[in-house]
Image 1 (cartoon, rainbow, N blue to C red):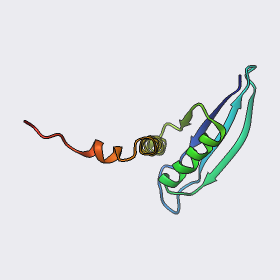
Image 2: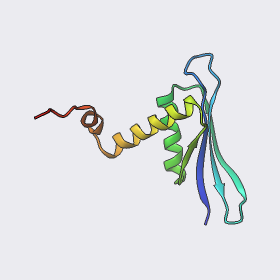
Image 3: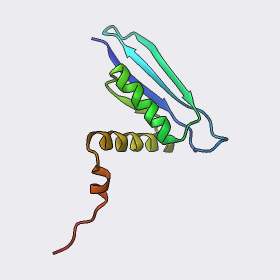
Image 4: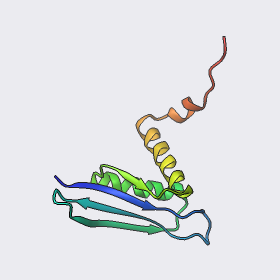
Amino acid sequence: GFRPYIVSDTAYTDTAASDYKATGLFLVSPFGEVFVLDLLAAKDPTPIFAQKTLAMAVRWHASAIYAEKVRGGSVLLDTLRTQIRDALLPGAGAISRTKRKKR
């Protein structure tokens, strides 16, 4: 069948002078044809851009999210992982930051 996926191109920095961040939703047919279904361009801070990217992924049932392999892409993926974890396991962020006491 068709496979929807997302590709994101992030800005290297998160300042007012930064380049735009962009996310595209693509659909690949069984014959290798590629269709562009949705696009987003914004100068949002990474957490807000990640929320919008995740909303796009949920809306279109994307099977994967790929990010440009630069510092901004790594930050976006880390932010997405945190947002997904927090949505699935409320309070997990607090648990993962607690240190275990030595006996």
